[in-house]
Length: 275
Image (cartoon, rainbow, N blue to C red; front, side):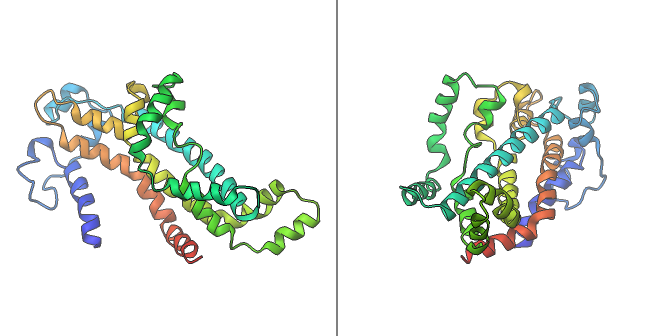
């Protein structure tokens, strides 16, 4: 299983280190015979278009630094706002009783069963009518509020917190929001970080919605910019080596998150799944 998972990544890395003119001649080699970083220089803008073509590129251009910045803003806003909103909602469902709470929570759970593509067109029409096309607000609009799975996941953890601590704080005069901020939130950093990490990975790789909403190259996120780079084929075929180099750069943030938080994610999912 590890080989099946890692092998495509090795192929991408190997392709990114091969000169485009030698790509198809060395397609069956597992390692590059003459490794080069010229493809990284191309996508990072360190070579002119003429120099890129001389080194086997197609002449396609990508502003990868701007795309990285757009992806960082798009992902960062959604991770922070959505995670905070989901944490508030999950705590309310776990600890508070109000009319219709079970029905409302059931609606959150049911929302996980609705394919995202089904609501894509209504969301697009709504964002268009608000005049938010080609804006950062339009790109984050469908994701920034809440996510059904995040609310469900965090609610299961809040149910496991000891009620006695919260009752003692309530006797001392603390209101529910203070109890949430000063007691529940500090005790829940592990599952909250798990949700934040999973949201970060999903949003970093999100393609379809930013592709629909952000047509302006200055607003394109990294997956959309990669698609635009691939489609620039003035010489008849994409610059596969350059595309793989850009893909490696795009993958680094998510790999770093998995290396740092991977074990904690597995432990939190196992703990919450047992509840």
